[in-house]
Image 1 (spheres, rainbow, N blue to C red):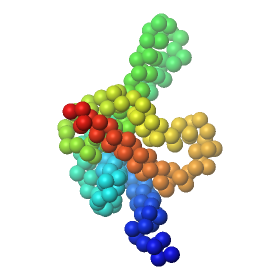
Image 2 (cartoon, rainbow, N blue to C red; image 1 turned 180 degrees about the vertical axis):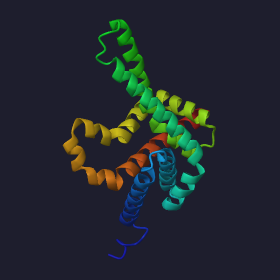
Image 3 (cartoon, rainbow, N blue to C red; image 1 turned 90 degrees about the horizontal axis):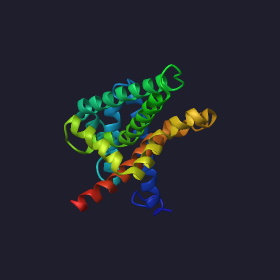
Image 4 (cartoon, one colour; image 1 turned 90 degrees about the vertical axis):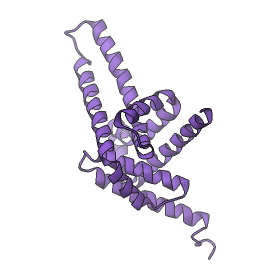
Length: 211
């Protein structure tokens, strides 16, 4: 029994990791409430879970450190992605069901906007991971996020599903979304970040091997 509760025992390490993920999840939600701070909050989360994966650091201290150091650039990136989302949604809303324009033009516009939406979804999964890990100008981080999302298609799709599953479930099956509310509130965002950062690390390792 003593070995079971030993801090170095696998069960206790797992329990400690789950506890840290819960704390990070709650902290991320609270720090994202002003909306404009979502970018810095996600960057702090990605930085913290990356240290957890590497088995170093202290999650809460790492979170606040990264939140502060990334605030300016992460906020700029968040506002860029937010503005792009507003434009894409507005464009889709305008062209869907549009009867007054040429059918071919509408189809082309919807195709372009659909491609833009896909690029947005894939690149969003990378942008704050990159911001939390590399010290680059905003435009370089934005470009790298788009490149990573486009060139790592299947990992990026998986990461996008992990990121947007709660919202997708809300639109498709609201009852299911609210039934799992405790999961979203307690651990989902930090857990999905943990999984996504792990996938991104594998991609970074492959890039380094090639170079």
